[in-house]
Length: 229
Length: 269
Ligand SMILES: Nc1ncnc2c1ncn2[C@@H]1O[C@H](COP(=O)(O)OP(=O)(O)OP(=O)(O)O)[C@@H](O)[C@H]1O
Ligand SMILES: [Mg+2]
Image (cartoon, each protein chain N blue to C red):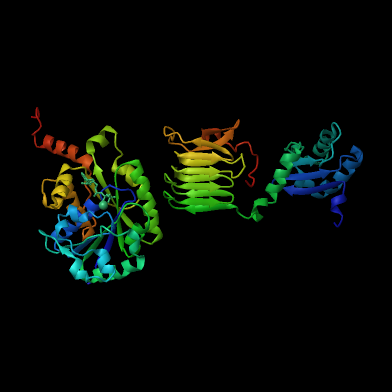
């Protein structure tokens, strides 16, 4: 069992199916012989089992999976045989997935400053990176952040995000009625008319600050996996 | 005795600090408490004028602090109301002649003599304000339903909290008609931003201007809405914190409803 990694056929139980990794570079006949060994041992346990034939990273020859599948069905009465369900991961997704699998953020030291309470006129709050205020930012108060500013309450004062030059930063509030917002080097005066009942956020779009409904725009929906911001 | 020192402040000028100080002071004295009101607006004194006591001033708060007279000599007893005393400001000095430590000394003396001492704070947040809040136990923030007044009150509230003083709010000079039309912020808007305990709501009332000019206490005028509001505020400060706050806007509709119930409304059966 010491050199399992190098075996042409490896078998393990995954959930309610049998996951069989094969080396697709070998000829089909040799693979059938290799498959016979573990399946002989399984015998009636293999009957009607769901089998996944995984050729690994290497490309499987045309019809190889089908041929081996038919062989297993005929010889050992297995049930359904299929290749792994996932598509070939693109390199980018693959990296994100390995991060996901490794829980990369587990070891990420938080760079967010999270405060609760009301920020009053004349008070100024500064965060190196992201700033989250669980409360209201009153008119005359100022919040400044190197990254995003998120207000879980009413944003009525001035919010300055992405300092000095992070144009990807956003400013979000459950009740978005700022006096003024700045992102990177851009400035926008608050519009007293805005401020619906839904959370809104400001971001830079085409070199201007735009304000959108957060739920409808859902700015991060295209990220396939959670990642550190 | 271990009385309370309460500072009346607002940040913005002209919102009614002096009116509130004189009125609540008078109301509490009429309710039987020993009350001192101190004019901390050095150089711009006018609490004496509002109380009609300007012609009796001999010494002032700066004289007391600099040891030129005894506290008792400088306190002026009100003409009409027993138990109400004024310590006037100096008209000629600069605010900076008083240091915060002087206030601690003065307030410790006042605590022993009076149930309530009110400090009428100058506008702004400079030395005069710092002096006034130095030794205060409690604070009353006066605010008008107006954006700039709210902004300044909010600033002052932050500064009070940083001194571990939890302030209470009076919204003054409410004009119900304008609020109903949507031309004036309602007290609810004010409370939403400032989010501190409400002590009372005072309507704009011509009688306040008249009584200030004649130096008579508004709280003695039973028909003045503002005067009655000040009386209720005084009760809330003195053992009745849960006395309901009357909404100046709601009053009209309550009366209308009562009228309908009693069949007094024209056309009702
Ligand atoms: N409820 C009210 N109804 C009508 N007039 C009022 C009311 N409250 C205050 N006033 C008037 O507003 C003016 C300013 O009031 P007051 O002097 O009490 O303000 P203040 O905050 O002490 O001002 P300052 O900052 O200059 O000391 C005065 O003329 C006063 O009579
Ligand atoms: Mg005054």
